[in-house]
Image (cartoon, rainbow, N blue to C red; front, side, top):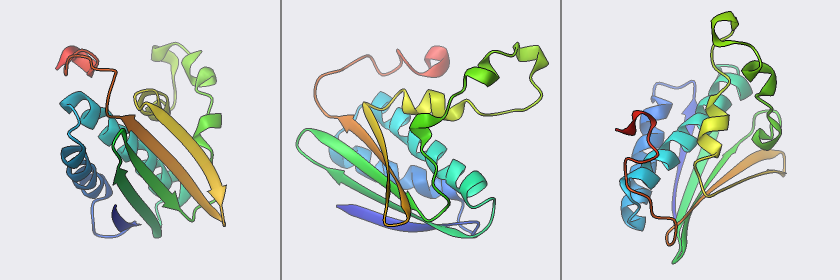
Length: 152
């Protein structure tokens, strides 16, 4: 099991630390570059939302734990921000506005990221948010570039 504690709002750039953490796990699990890419995107999206929305840009702990099992890689991302269940996020109101008329940027990352991991779940346990990302290590093999935006 691999674990680290990051501080949102600290001098450590959260996206870089999350990318490094996922890279180590992905290599240990032997993920394809496609799987590693989508796992990193999902973990980065969750942690960025915690920092910006959960902690509102202030200080706060983000605990990331990863484990490689024979059939899957799982990443747990936990925080102490107010409860937020990403599985209940509904992008429909934003998507219903034509792109040229949208006043707000963003709001689509969760939709994209969580749809690219094999399983995602959320729990609120002992006053903490727990997001669980799972990538299955056998089965769904697609060429590395087939699902990456822009085919690159």
